[in-house]
Image (cartoon, rainbow, N blue to C red; front, side):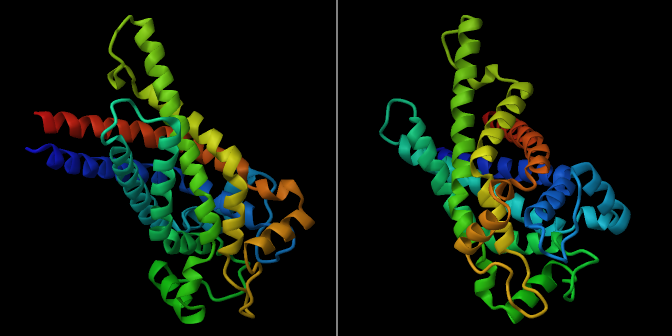
Length: 311
């Protein structure tokens, strides 16, 4: 098999590994995602958004008043969006890295890792923004909601297109583009931390070759959680802005927030810096272990596919 054929196959193996890891993450962590989204849009002035004291009380209240259906609101678009996003992300990311590695003898620099991750993030955002918008709106439907609730994924898409037009599907796209920094920071941190750990283990075990074979699932879990935590601290306000923009308009058809600058101005005015970090606790509780699971699954699926291809 030619090197180009092997390269193309390897890119699809990366995409498959990313998709599997994304699905696993969503299935386990979705209730915390619902809680995070509801915290993010609660600016203290909206009457249709429930108020929760903390993450534990929010999970308990949703389970008691809305049942399992409430805890898994927006699950289908989340599964579709996460599976597609991770698959596309790893595919575009590995493809970009390969392109930048072409005709280079040394390893990629941190800057090129950053560019590769940013490039992948922009393409993924363009493809998946409508899915995330629908997920957010389904998660925000509560017994307090004033408008007719969406009956599901298909009904949500149909109603949005009918009532607001196709442009509404791309609400929050601007902060999503800036949120590329999240993935870029996460992947750059992951790559650099992994190189440091491999180098440390190579010196400790007195091995001349620096190979990822020296890393185990515990290493991947720690690397995934650490890189995710760094990315969350830097980029979380953008997630709050996006969620607030993606809310469904009220019964009068007027959106609560008109554009990104409106969200920035209103949040800073009424809530201060704290408003930009609403829901960060359930976000960390969800995403730190989620990143661990994602990278453990991803790296092990890659190894499995690689070994089966070799055989």
